[in-house]
Structure formats: structure tokens, C-alpha cells
Amino acid sequence: MKFLDQAKIYMRSGHGGPGSVSFRREAHVPFGGPDGGNGGRGGDVIARAVNGLNTLIDYRYQQHFKASSGRSGAGRDRSGASGDDIILRLPIGTQVLSDDQRTVLADLTFQGQEIILAKGGSGGKGNAFFKSSTNRAPHKSQPGEPGQEMWVWLRLKLIADAGLLGLPNAGKSTFLNTVSAANPKIADYPFTTLHPNLGVVGIDGKEFVMADVPGIIEGAHKGAGLGHRFLGHVERCRVLLHLVDATGEDPVNAWRVLRRELLEYGGGLTAKPEIVGLTKLDATPKDYAMEMAEALRKAGAEAVFSLSSVTGAGVNAMLRRLIGFIEEAVSEENQPEEDEPWSP
Image (cartoon, rainbow, N blue to C red; front, top):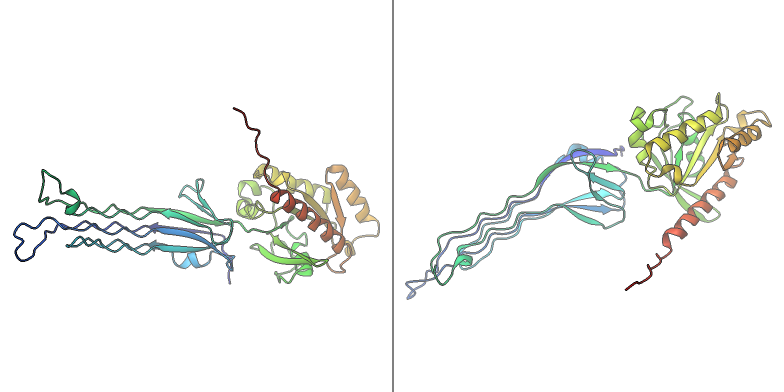
């Protein structure tokens, strides 16, 4: 299945049905009163978060969604049937934004969450509603309210425990392939990964979900290299794993570049716990990785590990530290909020 994390769609809720103008017609009842029923309610457009989806590819081929309108009222005080709702089945982590791509209309963060995006129009009143002591035979009714229509953007932000970051060709896909059952494309040239990948990582009988984000380049916070869309996928992660190519020209500067991009992007990314992994340990001199790790700590990196995705050296130690961060974050999230002191 192809990955798509952004789509633009048109939606329209159903119009309300018109009320009816009708009068009671029965034998021996020459002056039957009004009995026109009300129109039915138009259908809603509803966004629902469901399990088992991790792409918006279905919304590339179908982009128009219209709920059905309510039926008109009828005589004998019969109300019209309501229109059927349209339900948009979306992956967990999807945001619905207005056409300006700034206003968030809905943020689907857990399974089964439902939000009405466009409410159907109310049905019009029939002439029976307008009967009064001074108007015994009203000949008027109401049309139904029109439905709401709008263009919206769907934007998927993957929900994962750990976000895997790094400059192009830092070894992220190789690492994810080593520690999980994910099978991302691997090659010895930059930008091999063109869309995020998810993998379930296991260590010591525990599991967590890791998202491999395509290589971030300088200027990503301004949109360079689709930076905004890629960085958006790590906003919901509890911890960041920043891989740095130990065989690169300047590993310390590579770390600084990405940290600067996270700071400029915002969204609280720099406040998240971070682990730095020096990759490709098998292709460096014996003591070089230790020297680079010390240089990174002096530059401000706190948790630094050296590893090789090819030989597996250092991988388990880093995964244990990673899951420790995740468990700490989960524990903090599950703590009940303290009640504010009462004051008269």
C-alpha cells in the first residue's frame, strides 16, 4: 500500500428536507385542520479514527463526500426521513485542517474517536406547526436548512513511541531494518527513504513503535525537502533517536544542524528526551567513535551511544536506554493531575 500523509477533500452535509403543507381530508370532516409534517434532518459528515490504517491513500482517488439530504414532510403529520451520515474512516493521528491549512478542526488521537465536521441542515417545519388560535388554516411551511460545505486538508501525523531522525544517509533505514520487522528500502545514497516507515521494536520482552522519518536537511523548518511534513510525524513521539553518521565529514556539526532545525520548527521537539546514536561503528577506526562521542557530549548531547547496525554492536544497550525513556514518559502521562486547592 502506498503511503500518503496529506490530502485535500471536499465535503458537504445534507440539506434539511422541506416541511409539508397539507390539510386533513376525511369523510364528514369538512374543515379538517393542517396536518403537514416536518422535513427530515440532513446527514452529517463525521470523521472517525480507526485502527489498521496508516495512510491517507484512499482520499487521493475519492475527494468529494456528500451526505444525503432529508426527505420532505408529508400529510397526516408524517415527518420526512433523515438523511444518511457520511463517515470518513481515518488513521489514528490524523488532523483535519481548514482550507488555509492553519486552523485545526479536528485532531483524532485515539481509536473510535468521532467528530462531526459538517452538521446536516435541520428539516423545515410543516404547516401544522404554524397553527394557532388566530390562524386555523396556515398555508405556509419552512424549507429545510442548507447543509454545510467546505474544502479541508487531511494531514496524518504518525503516532509512535520513538522518532528516528538524522540527516540523509545516516543509516536510519538500516537500523530500523535491524531492530524490527519493517523492511524499508536501503541503499548507499541519500534520500533512499521517501516516506515515513513504522516498525515494532522488541527488547527484553518489551515492545514499542518506532517511526523512521526521511532524512532532514538544513532548512527543513522552512519546508526544504518537505521538511514541515516530515518533522510533523515526530511531534507525537515520546522520545527522539538522533542517528549521526560517524563516517561523515563532521558528525558534531551534523548533530547541531538537526537540533537547530528542531528548534526552528517548534512544536516542543527540542524539549523531548533525545538519544544520539553514532552509527557505522564497523567502518571507523578503533578509538574514533569514543572521541566523537565525547565531542558530542561537550557540544551538548547528553545520552550518546556508539553502534553498528551491521554487526549489532551497541544496539541493545541503546534500545534499553530508549525504552527506559519511553516508560518514564508513559508513567508521567498516566499520573493523575493534582486538584487545585479550593478557595472560597
